[in-house]
Length: 230
Image (cartoon, rainbow, N blue to C red; front, side, top):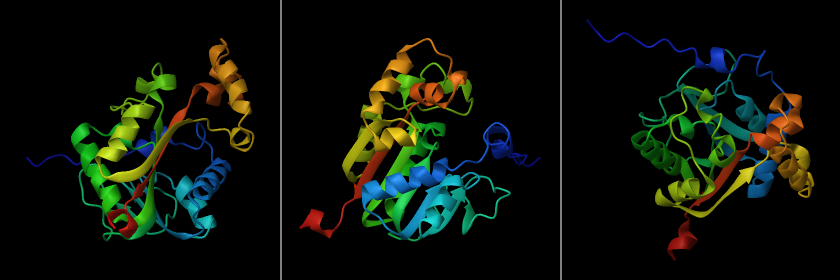
């Protein structure tokens, strides 16, 4: 008997619109990230694009976008390719994008898959282009990390930085990131989030309680350009 084909329903289970409704947050996030990188348009790929929240936000910012994911969303995602990003070669040319972005993907991969994923992310990025990774911050999320049963590889600031540098990225920076746009505009609010994180306030008390406690890592690396080899 042949191998039974796996039925995929991760998006339907983990990203149903009732538990995770669509909001304006992806627009705020991608505007913040691209401004940090100094990018205004260009080509971008969302690796593990899911239902396309970040991908559509990039498109609204003027980027030419491509989406890769193991599962096809019901949303009409531009240039969507079904791809097992931990095992298969990305269906994209070498040095073809200015920004290779991936949110909440690398923690689902085992070490051999991470190596493949990182090498492919670097391969498709143009010289002087950027690789941006977002993943749960183990320091803040260790109690809840394995609540998501497909999570297998936790990261800290140090380990994500090592990972990105190990696979050839330069100018790597990794920081713990609070997913509240007011904190990006007014950094002094981080102190308030740190206090909330220490208090026995349930995450269900509101978005400030939740995102003060559920933090992610934001890792940024650049693919070396000609000037780096001069």
